[in-house]
Image: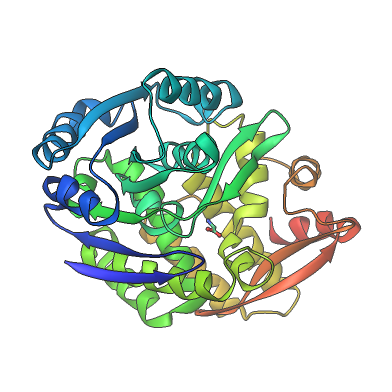
Length: 350
Ligand code: GLY
């Protein structure tokens, strides 16, 4: 097992290893009172791991209740958020109780926002069951729901008490979902770690789960420690996301987040090479790692279509967006880009 200690406004551990789900109750008891554990999960994850989670919690003395919603981004909604709050109220959950988010990014994001706001904040822990959640969304306290106007437009920074990542859970993922999460791992390597990039190029999908996830969490931990509230360096974690979200929105969310981010990273790499910010060799390396993981790097949408979607992205700040642009593998810069220049940037990268 690897333990990464996060120091943000609250300190907590991210524990990563095989077999950790069976320790859920004992681990929760180290960071919260014994009371009721309200498990929030979705229709994909609950049938696989619900029983084991309940057994682990009850054997440590917790009473459990569970709220399960249909899997999918469509349920990271205001309606589902209110429904979960009502569920907690009806079940008399108090500030002495805890929320357990058992699932991927959607479950983690909405559960975290529920935890941040129910009774003005109750304890929660994250039990990520996808690669994406393990390396990114479960760590760092960003919680959110989507609004009709765009993704993640309502939320709070609210740190969990613990992140418990059982790497065994990732082996039951359909290969497509697993590969999707690898897009975020590739993102960390392009941003910060040329050696991780080489490991991924060498091992492809067979990379060592525990050490690679732990390395990504360490990288994220360092960013969150410097910039918990996303006013500076944390924005780098959006590599590929501004344009990726636009690709995702243009597909009417039929394209998964990880694939959309992969396309977003390919587009910024293409533009960076055209603008002389990175070399063509760096662009080629980025395209080849995406190909190695069988992630897409092209879109049928036009620069105009992507530009229009990107305008509603939440990172828009006044008249400009901050793009994350690679200079070399392991090094990226923040590039404030006037809105008027964004379309040309996208065009250059297509
Ligand atoms: N997922 C990006 C962040 O946590 O800042």
